[in-house]
Image (cartoon, rainbow, N blue to C red; front, side, top):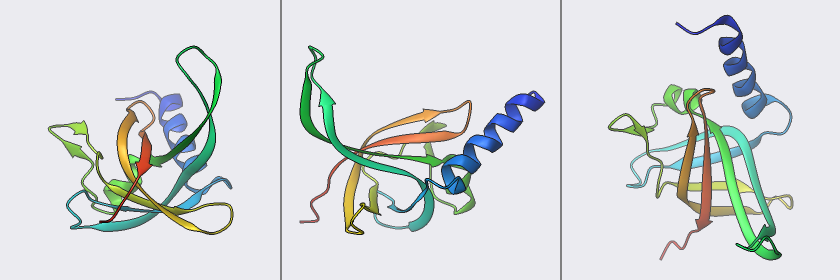
Length: 127
């Protein structure tokens, strides 16, 4: 059983990500293409990064932060052998110009304390 403060933190973080005013509409499709769902979460794309020496470089970075509870409500398969596994799922969201971009999940990092999942995205070529 979790403490009351932890339960509140989990609920607050889910609300902030899904309807806190900074959310984006996100579509995610299973790696095998069998299921596509729509939900809200953080979606970010920028072109500033750092190399291994700490030097500022121009490199595309795209990631999303979504709620595992919201994915479960939509019957989206999140875990394989009890581990979060969203690799190779297809993600779409609109950028600041309302242009819809499509990505593939290259890495996923679950925060199993709060129930949030950060997915690092890569370019997706449908060919």
